Length: 417
Image 1 (cartoon, rainbow, N blue to C red):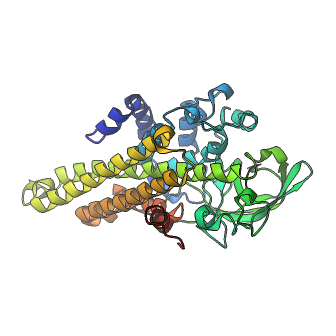
Image 2 (cartoon, rainbow, N blue to C red):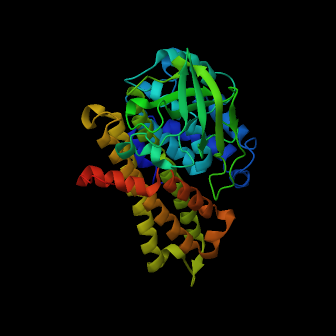
Image 3 (tube, rainbow, N blue to C red):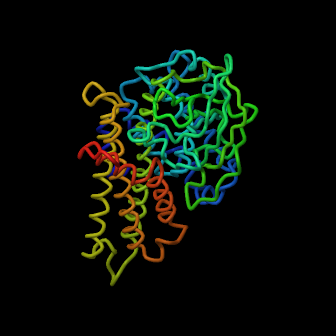
């Protein structure tokens, strides 16, 4: 345990035990292999032993399933945000790509399994898949070729750019469309939480639908994984839906309510910024060792004023970023104080916190690479891997631009952004 662990241990009392479990898993299954994971952009089998150990052997696949359906019930608890922040931070320390492959698997469940809205019929349908004896992956599929992150820009567009359609035919939805970039696509996802429209071109949010689609349903085609700059353990691809039929009750809630709780799904995704703080905590460990052992003029690097000044700025950035992360977690855990997680205010603040953390950890990684010099670009040291992975996290969920627009709208009443 290093000096940076104390903060989260104070925030959440079970932290030490959880950290020990995840850290032991990471040290045995991830750390020795993460360079190989980084190369396996088109192969999901190489990470299977690590994910099976985490999800099945340790039981963490059951975390967000309600207790009445055989899970741990964290999503219906009063500490969902804090647990997620700590858990994602510790996995992100090892490999952010594996962290998102795990976390995205539960993302679609947030709309049906999180307190105060639990769809018991759908939980009963899908819970056995998550409580079984093999890894099971989900994903929220929303981004489309023509509009990028437009679907998340609900305050302005209200879903009118969504092209993937769902038409009710008797007691079935018939779905057609094209998605791209969803986490756990490329053949990984078993269960899709699909964002679509029941009336193309409509800006009435009652026409936004969130429908569950088992990935093996006829008409669903997942393309080959993209070759990305980082996050290789997270597979992304194009996905096509051609006359895909699912039961009508696979819609999460219904007109208006789907869009309302989809806002919460987006907001909860911001807590995955814990991957970032976890990764820079690993960077801190590398820096500590490097600057203690490498010498200049007979003294360790850390004993030189110029280096010590940079080190202090890096660790300050890490510590403040973690404070912001756990502030976000508290906000998500206390709707009685801050408002529901689907509210515009909570959603905006979550994006604002995500933007700050991503900007800060990128600066911290860049400073660390500069201190290490040529070692900073050497793959053996893994700092450049974290740097590449963190850049992708900065870009997803609408990137910095959507975070900026939503922040300006809320705090400065901007009307046309």
